[in-house]
Amino acid sequence: MIAQNISNIISESIIETVGGTPLVKLNRMVNTNKFELYGKLEAANPGGSIKDRTSLFMLRQALEDGSIKKGDTIIESSSGNMAVGLAQACLHFGLQLIVVVDPKLNSHTEKILKTYNVHIERVTEPLEDGGFLGARLARVQWLLNTVPNSFWTNQYGNLDNPLTHHTTMTEILDALQGKLDYLFVATSTCGTLMGCADFIHENNLETKIIAVDAVGSVLFGGPPLKRLIPGHGAGVPSQFLDTSKIHDYIYVDDVDCARGCWSLLEKEAILCGGSSGGMISAVKKYADKIEDNSNCALFLCDRGERYLDTIYSKDWLLKELPESKSAFTPLGGW
Ligand SMILES: Cc1ncc(COP(=O)(O)O)c(C=O)c1O
Image (cartoon, protein in one colour):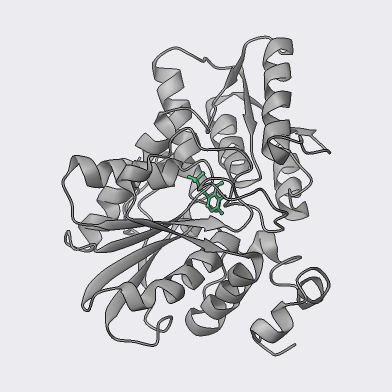
């Protein structure tokens, strides 16, 4: 599964190019030389996000243990990235795919999914208790009872989701010769967070793991509130989260995400999605607590192209997130 970052290797297929993503030094992001900051460029995965890893690992495990076979139908609830990762892997393995989405699915992702010939099931109303995620999960259950030979990869409860990231952690640690003091991780299913946290725990590492959650997400006990930027945050509690393995958590709102995205673009020429911007803002908020000479890493979870009509549209920002105007200046000005 680990692709090598060297150009003279031939990959047997597209799925062999998942993982093995670059760790990029983000020299210009923090106004201090107290600590180093690195971004794990998950946007470099062939499907454009960290969920390429999760979707591939879960399907491989299910194929290996006989839970699924060629021709079966995979069902999953996804706000976008998991769906694209699954679309790629399902096409490769000869599996059908139904994804259950909500109105936060952006138009670019929808076009990608349609091009991969994915069947899209859309929920339009949130559940009073459980939000859009709850509504999507209810639709998944209905589909499982209706579609023959169907299988729910279940990114919310499948232990192969966190297990995926033992490899991701190994890659980061190898690149940093084992010295990783802080890891910032955006949360939704908490698969990435807990996979990395379990690895840290099992290997008795000193790494402090900081969860980065969305204001309005219920994961750390806050009330559910309207959120505009998809990817991180959740309307229902995580089945993986074990706060005893987490050093701390920090909230970012939609404006923090947009500010972080534009800052990453302007200073590092990296065009990434909303949660990446959120993690950039989280590190800035947390900077005073970070000890001198620390190595800090965060995930650049997905590509920015899917956010061109939202985070990277100045008109959208002024209309939907008007506070942005006083909070930051995008590249090229307002
Ligand atoms: C862009 C982005 N960032 C962060 C996350 C959170 O990852 P996890 O589900 O592993 O908590 C997701 C999940 O879909 C995502 O799409």
